[in-house]
Length: 184
Image 1 (cartoon, rainbow, N blue to C red):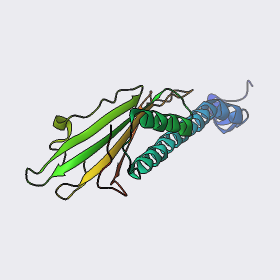
Image 2: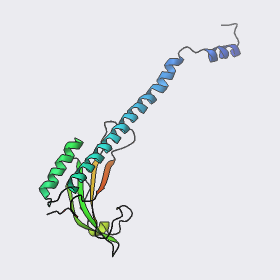
Image 3: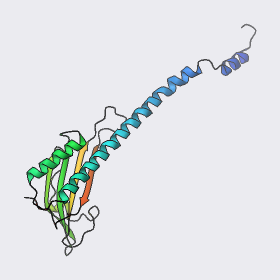
Image 4: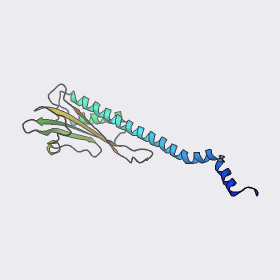
């Protein structure tokens, strides 16, 4: 190499492509693995939410068809059904409430509200729903609606920045075969 100039050596180094695949793989492979894992985690999280939405819908539909008074035992059974459908026993919470609209005062009130499971849900009071026009459906005077809420905390094997979010679902159902669902 004594006869080559510095400019020639730099040109040869610039044009040399041996080992570039290895270098590119070392740079890109961790990024590809991270993207793959993130895709799997977010797909799993959406599946987790979808299952809870469907289970909430099922419980709401089941309760809306009742013509006889429902009891604490009935709601315990509904919670067991919910846990079975979602396949993570003990980490779900379910709130079942019946809300009535008063057209004269243009406000909502709670007929009854019950919570089952472990979580951050609490039974509603009249103060919680009185002016809830923004998120409760439009009702006629004296009409009632069942509101079923569920919540669970999503826990992933890998943390790709999503943390452990609470997954919530809310379903509204009108009582089907009676003007209201009675809780005793």
